[in-house]
Image (cartoon, rainbow, N blue to C red):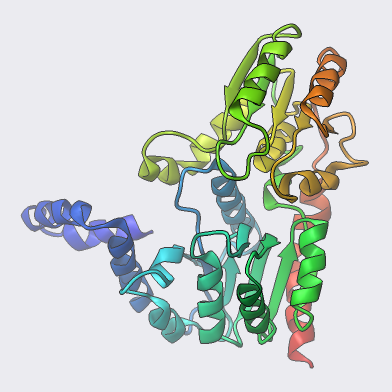
Length: 376
């Protein structure tokens, strides 16, 4: 939307447009996005029903970008007539040009806010939690849907501050995406509606069909502070697995231009899933690596990370995709599972359990929770 507005502004006159376009690309991203978002908000009709999608993913992690793709698809499916205005976290906080006041001025009584899913109810880094609190304080009566979150706070004061802020909200539904986060949410947010809900990317499982031969083992392993095993440990396991089949390695965080990857998120996510369909087996410490593997119909062995996100997230699949999801407590166990699973005959076709059981019902759940809050 922002790029279309930019074109209308600067290309009414070609010469002026070329000058402005050149200057535009020299402006730091944070400032550029704030200016264009302000323009967008100031030209909205307060009386027209709108959806504000806040904290949209703006980096190279395909897991977060896939959440964005799925959230947009979900909004398009269930709210097709309502315009969606997307705003980055850094346009609301972490800037001298915050659009928060502009958002408050244009927010109407029939509007609602949806927050990006992921690891954003946390003090581990980034500005997402700060943004959530800023928006909530500015719009305490707004209807808000917090898409599935992993919760983790290192600092008790940060935890208390977030708890206090969320509990003031009158019309918010908070979705926790694993049992540990759900228990934390119940403790931290006793005054708001909370539901245990799977990551929205699970809604893709069983919705795509793939044909073609499969061969080899794909390792999808992270290279950040959340990794539990060293690169040397992973490399040793990969060498052992070469006895079973050919081995390759990838990650859901991609190299290349941030702008290009974000702009073409749908294409990158689809290609990632397509790549996974070429393998007989996946080994991963990435939560969305696990989900992408299931979307591709590829069995997956999950190895540990430093926190609960990946292993507790895997609990969603127990009793549903038992022949496709395995949890390894050690790398030795991962190897033994790989030997066992590699040649196991499978249809590579899964049912769309999460789309049908959860996300098809979420609009009604959200409406019900907001209505219940308003009758108190």
